[in-house]
Image 1: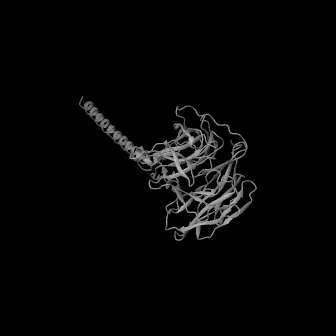
Image 2 (image 1 turned 90 degrees about the horizontal axis):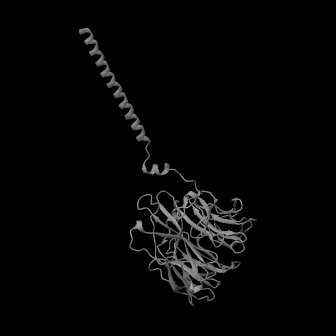
Length: 437
């Protein structure tokens, strides 16, 4: 019995020590596994990058107010959407989404100087050695005006009939004169000159409807960014004429867009700065813009022109915390002038200050000073980090840019299609083709 008892005690001891060894090995293994999991756990920034991604150009990046399925938009063939990048200008076909590069020798990208599509289907753009005019398809390029290497072009405009051009230049080194040029496309002339130290530093905003003898000017306050404050008119028919103030810039007010074939002006009663996203989701020159905090519509009347019958489209949002502020970008009128579309966005209050965008439309009825402004209607929201509107394909289909892709959206039905996914930042310049009404 003593021997049996001794063997039992030895067995129990061995069993106890074995269990301790196994437990210890298990804890070491678990600890090592935990360390590996911790080492592989992403940081908040990494989690954002590793989150399920949505392919650029996917309709899943857009949502309807009722979260209903988004139908696919069928576009008519034979049309082209022209767009620019920091390196080149191209057009994409609505027939088969083919992308064609346009011949633009010397092209220089500038957010403040957008290339212009002429009524005849040519492209007017600024380049390293001046202003150029190129055909979209046969690649023939002609120089409209030479440019001295000591100056840079700061704005460019064309009358609605495509016959009168206007542009401004500023000294490349920040010291010198601000020059304004205007006149027939074949023979423009210097019309104004002043020191860049003597602001307002005028830029060309555009031509009033049906007029090639009056210029609308705005002030960039000496900045080389695409900024514009206040509004002036300049009579080109009088050589000694001076700019006449239309809209004060005291509260950072600025013009935004003219309604097609009308003197109806959309402007911002108040503009402000928005936090710059730190994740490079918005290009630096776009993030540096002043954005409208409110929208108003008015008609330019009289001689000299003045503002009258202003109507609020989007009331101001002053004295709100930044997290509650909503800003407006790329407002655009439909070709028939019956619809105003714009993107409204807000920014996160913490790094990386990402933006959250929604597309709105406003119905406009009547004409001239009798325009009746409807209430803004939400068309769609989007998870794209940067959403901008482009030109219209017809009175109810608008083009859009979102995170490297081009879209077309029917604002009436909500139908959507992807035009192209070139990647990088793109700016839509216009549309060409037949039946764009």
